[in-house]
Length: 118
Image (cartoon, rainbow, N blue to C red):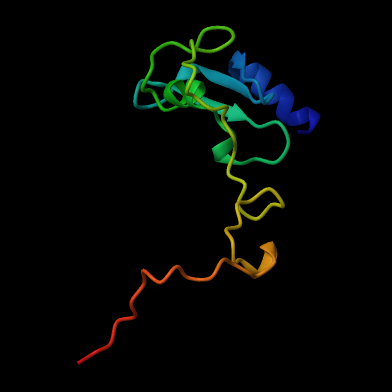
C-alpha cells in the first residue's frame, strides 16, 4: 500500500485490530448516511476475501457489535485452522484421476451400473 493510502486511512478511520494472517481491520471515524460506521479490512499481501477468519468475519459484517478478543475466541479440539481459498494454487485439492494429480484413479469396484435409456 502506498503512503498516500496509509495517510488517508489513518486520518479517516481508527485501527481496531489485526488477525493471525496480518490483515488489519478498521472502522471509520464518522458514520455514513445510514448511521453506521464503515468497517473494512486492509489485506496482508494479495487481497482475497476468503483470507478473513471467522472470528473477524462476524464483526466485519455487523453480526457482532464488538471485535473478537485478543488471540481470538476459545477453540474446540475438533476445529481446524482457517485457510483461505486455495483454488488455482499448487495447494488446491486434486482428487484421484485429476490430470494434475497424475490422471490415474483406482478401477471401479463393480457397484456402478451405467444408465441405459429405454
